[in-house]
Length: 399
Length: 64
Image (cartoon, rainbow over all chains, first blue to last red; front, side, top):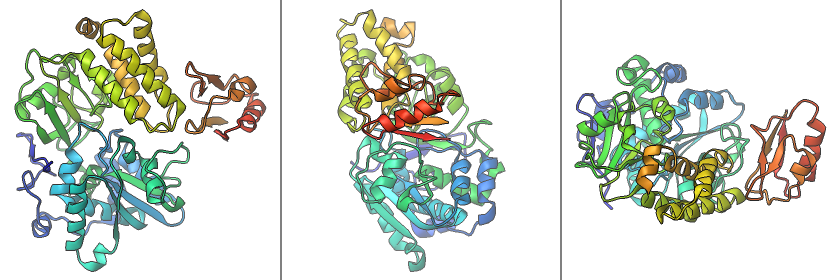
C-alpha cells in the first residue's frame, strides 16, 4: 500500500502537515529551511513541554513532560526510543509522519536524547515503508549525527508497540508486553531508564522546543492543547490523515476535513478500535481527551471510522471482538479467556440470540476486565463490550 | 504495601485468594485478580507475604 497523503484543517497553520509534506516526503534541505535540526535550548525543553501541556499521541494521552522528567532525573545511562510501531488497525497517522517527515521525528528524538542525556537513541519500526523512509533520512544526516541514531525493526502486531514490548524486543526478546512494575522509565532498554515516546509526540516536542509553549497553545483546549494528527476513515467523502486542532466537535472536524457524516450512519469506531463503538451522539462531543472520556468514548490514537448505512453495529462489534480474540498474544490467561468470552457473547448479540445474561456479562466485563492484562490490549476488548451495550439507543440498533 | 499480579504468569492455582482473601480473589475465568488497586489493608501484610510465597508461578510482587 502506498503511504497515505495528509491534509490540515483549514482554520489552522499546521505544524506537522507543512509545505508539500502532505503529498510527498520533504527533503533534508526543505526540513532545514523549516528550522528542523536547528539548535534548541536543551536545559529548558522539559519545562517548556510542561507549560505546553503536550500529551502523548500513542493513545493514552499521558503528559509527556512527566515521563521525560522521570527519565532525566534517573541515575546512570538512559535511553530514548521513538516508537513508530503503529499497532492500531484503523490508524495511519504515524505511517504518514514517518514516510513524509522522518526528519521531524529524528529531530524530536535527538532533542529528547539531549534533554534526558541519553546514551542510546533508537527508532522502533515495523511497517516496511517507514523503515525505508527513516533509514534513508538517517543516511542524509552528517555522519556524526547519524551515528547517534539506531533503528530496530519488528514484525507488525498490535501489542508490539506497547512500551514494555518495545523494550523487551530491543533487549533481544519477543515484542510482547511484560508485567509492570517496573515501567520502562524505571527499567527498560539495557535495564536502563528508558523514555519510550510515540513518534508524533516527539515531532510536537521538537516544535515546542523551537517555538515555545505559548505558540503551541494557540490552538486547542486547556487540557488538550495544540494540534494533532487524526485518521478519519470509513463512510466519508475524503478519508485520510489530517492535522486538526483540539476543541471543535467531532462533527465540525469531520465536516471541515473528511466530509459530513451521512445522516443514516449507524455509528462510529473511536480511538482506532480501542475505544469501541459509539452512536452518532459522539459527533457533538468536543474533540479532546477529557470530553470524549467523560462521554464514555475515547480519543486514543485519534483514529475515527464512520460506519456506513448498510453496516450494523452488532455485526461490526462481533467482527472486532473476534479479531481481539485472534490477535491476543495469549500471554495472559485472563486475556485469552476474556477476549474469547466477549467474542462469543457478541456473536450471540449479532445473531439476535443473546439473552439478558449475555448483556449483563458484557456490561460487567467492560469494567471488570480493564487493567487486568499485562498491557492494555484486553482493555480494548473490554471497551468494545461496554460500548456495545452502553446506551439504550445502541440496544435498539442491535436488535 | 501494594500487591502486583503478573497476569502473564498466573495459572489460576488460587493459593493467593486462599491465603490473603482481602487482597486477592479468583475471577470467573479462574485466574487471580487484585481486589481494588491491590493496596494491602493494614494488618494483612503478613498474609500478603504468605500469598506471595505461596504462588507456584511467582506471579505476585509486593511493594512498600
